Amino acid sequence: MAGDSRRGPAEAGLLQDYEAWLETLAPHAPTNQYRHNRTGEDNADAHLKRQIMGREVVVAITQGRLDFGPWEQIFYGKFDGNRRKCVLVKIIGE
Image 1: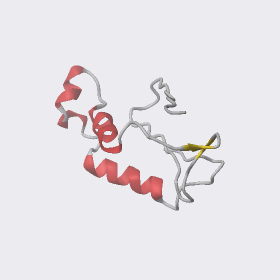
Image 2: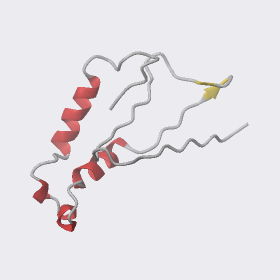
Image 3: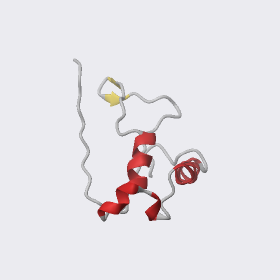
């Protein structure tokens, strides 16, 4: 996970706390603990971590700029290695 470097790093230790917490809830190893991994994949934990963390964010835009509170940032979590990803930005409203 990485924070928006324009706004500075995440609160001290927060990303590491998320990683440790998620690994406690859905540890990667042993990979044979997950039925999904019997298909030849080893990414069942990534599916579970994504389910916990969600996959979308809604952010207000005010006067053409993302409208964050003083401590808000968007973090993108990659739980499934370096597979190709895409980002969809949808603007709804005026």
